[in-house]
Image (cartoon, rainbow, N blue to C red; front, side, top):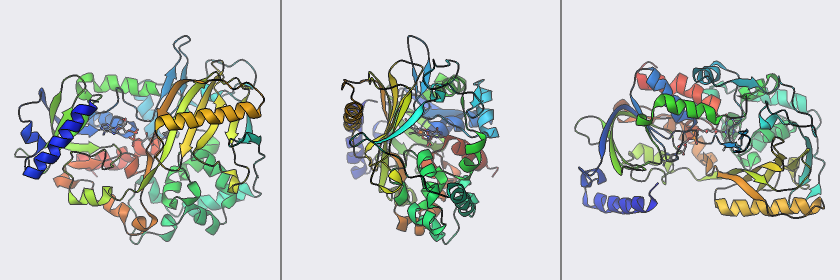
Length: 492
Ligand SMILES: Cc1cc2nc3c(=O)[nH]c(=O)nc-3n(C[C@H](O)[C@H](O)[C@H](O)COP(=O)(O)OP(=O)(O)OC[C@H]3O[C@@H](n4cnc5c(N)ncnc54)[C@H](O)[C@@H]3O)c2cc1C
């Protein structure tokens, strides 16, 4: 992205709007190309890529605007150059449902049931035909603040508590389909999740939920609606029957093949929206001015727009937001911090996954910001999967990385091994992760207003992505298939 060019354009945009001109008018004739499409998809992550493929299959012409140089969003796969071994360090698991099987099989990308394979034995040479995350290891819990060993409290009656939690969650089956909530909003949904599990006598289920809910920050204190959409009824169902993953541990293959299918001419990579004119066009199409990687400005003329990026005001600079969009998107007050990486030269015992469990907190929840875990990948010598999280998005990527390095040094000292200078093969920011509004806003109908945005601007403006459902690839594809695309096609 040309950040300096964008800054100048953003400045021009503010001057222009003060004088009543739009940036698009000012740049009239300056673009290298006008691209007309039925649908312009903004963001090429899980939901944008799936939607673009579905729309193409419904004979719609599309273009994707994506700020990265590839599609896939939070999907991240490290490819070891020497061996060709892939290691997924972002999105790993999917539910065994038709929308997943159809999407993967369309691109001839094989899946495996993670519970149905014989995992590697700890300490034995890795089976290279299995995904790296199926390299089986012993789990050791320690408090990463000082490296001391911790034996986590195992609450009694966990199985019964999980059943009670499932019953409580089953009262809200519509949460699997988006944010179409009843009015008034049930109190359960805007109370803190800690209060919800207490109310339903399900606190013993919390350690399991926390384990599956990485990235959710201070889970006991997030609104229940967020917690039980992220760890949802379907997770409860598939946790025992098995999640699926790409057969070699390369989920990026799905997006690479989807990119080929969509076609380079339909993707503007390393590109972002500079300005939009969606309200006052003479020809009825929505106009988006895009700053592209190699070819300067391009003007998109779109029959419809599908927005799938996190709808923060920062991300929507230059957009001619409607009062309804503005009143919804200004309500996001926070998000979480989430980073993942692969680190080499740690020197610790490679049959052991180190899990961060605080000695002194309820349910031994780690004190964030901190590494959740440091896990050997098994298929590469002395390479470790690191997951680092924070309760808010304020740490920079460099700060998070240096924090993680200090915790690795703490673990090394506690294990009486030399403190090394770890070498990062990858360190990816997924921050800001999981946008949130206040409990009060949820009670006051935030999600009703969010959902009501669909089909705005006379049926031309649509939305998908985690902010409109949850951070879950399977659920987002289902949401596209069952809710968003039918609305766009007028078949809902
Ligand atoms: C570390 C990690 C592990 C996860 N593991 C799993 C898992 O195992 N299973 C699962 O189902 N879910 C998992 N998730 C959640 C899942 O990845 C997300 O829910 C999903 O990616 C959200 O899809 P999305 O389309 O809303 O956003 P994204 O996939 O993030 O896509 C948004 C896209 O928009 C682009 N973008 C952002 N801003 C702009 C802009 N201004 N202009 C242009 N483009 C922009 C981004 O680069 C990105 O490609 C994981 C998430 C993380 C962070």
